[in-house]
Length: 603
Image 1: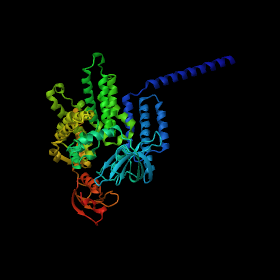
Image 2 (image 1 turned 90 degrees about the vertical axis):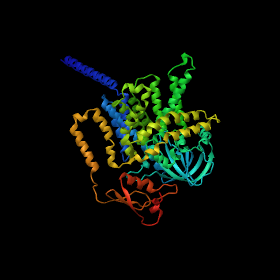
Image 3 (image 1 turned 135 degrees about the vertical axis):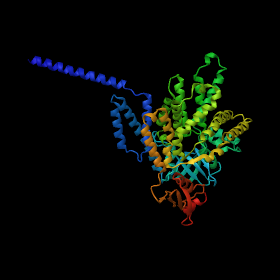
């Protein structure tokens, strides 16, 4: 009997062991085969960065640890949805840690005086003879976030050059933004650019020169455009610096929808790469057949794009464009099959891996919204085959593209620029081909032939003329600019809604819902103001500015501060607030004659 009980126990233990081995085998098989696609991983990374847009505070170290532990637990559950959530949580923590590192570096220097040995990486001349220099803040560890400071330097030496090393004693302070409706969020922009510190140079001691090849090249070629009519536009297209464009012109370009053409972005890097690809294909005509392959044009195209971005100083928009170009070259290198939206999705995810704070940048959203708008438009309303290939339908293809971009990107224009120009697509029909196929190729030709001094004046003169040609019609369409407030932003989505309603036949299947939504939007738009009088005390820092409003009219009480550089509270706060609320100023009251109350009288 004892022997029989032992045999039963032995077989029971064996059965349990077999079941356990089977369970482990099945679990590891599920864990191995339950894989996320690259598209889902990229989407999880992008979604993990989005909370930065709405978070008011960053996490503590304890919260970081808890989220990471939860993500690790979810990662080992053999289901795609749990693994997707794990990657989302990992990247949520990663983006928060990046922002936290930047804030920590900022808090270390804010409201303190520090002595730094650093390099001048950029500077801007002010009208009063003083300058603002951009300097990097030295990293303490390899994993610390990069940070930069824009520092005011009174009465600097005349031999300031980018690349010089100086020992500065600087009084630092953090960048602040005014909390008013309709104004520009300078703090959010500073975080996206990692330029979170400002300050004032107290003392400066020169250490040494370290002039880069880029600076030497710029010094050589910049002499040829000093007398150009469009000097600011040329500097913007070559160096990515828009600060030299006249304010009136900058406002004109923004209000006519062509501002995207005078910044180094994906369009310009792509055109530079395309010029390199065409050049490489031309060179291949001289090669023996055995030397001809598709990789050589890809390499030259990539090098031209990198060269253009390096010359611009590796600005953040240019860096993002190079990352997208690199993904495109890698995918074409092995002749891999992919869809355009996959390239855009993977590029956006890779950019956020490199710099999660890009999610705060308006240029990031404009770039990828334009790409996805083109993909969405051609998917929903493609042209017929006969219009896609014949050269005589080229203008029709441009009109089709520009009209689709106008409709789909209208909400972004209303949100970012507080207005829109419904005829901007006509200006772009003319300006985009001229800048793309004349100006940028001429710039690339001028940069690549910088050593031919006899040819340079002629090339840069042609570039100046091509910019005149591209933007000659912009003043004609300036009167069509329409300011917007909070409510028209909702109406901006009507274009996308109409596209979906017609294409998806929602007007037939969900007619009652569409009528109800339309009625609510109409009532919201035409409703009278919910108050008889309203008084708003604006955030202007040191000074005072109050808006008293009723039925679309406003009385302004004091106008805040004005600075020697030309800026004022009236320009940066009061006027944007009036435009955002669609208010017409009818009276101005000044309490007393001090600069922090009368600064807006001279606008």
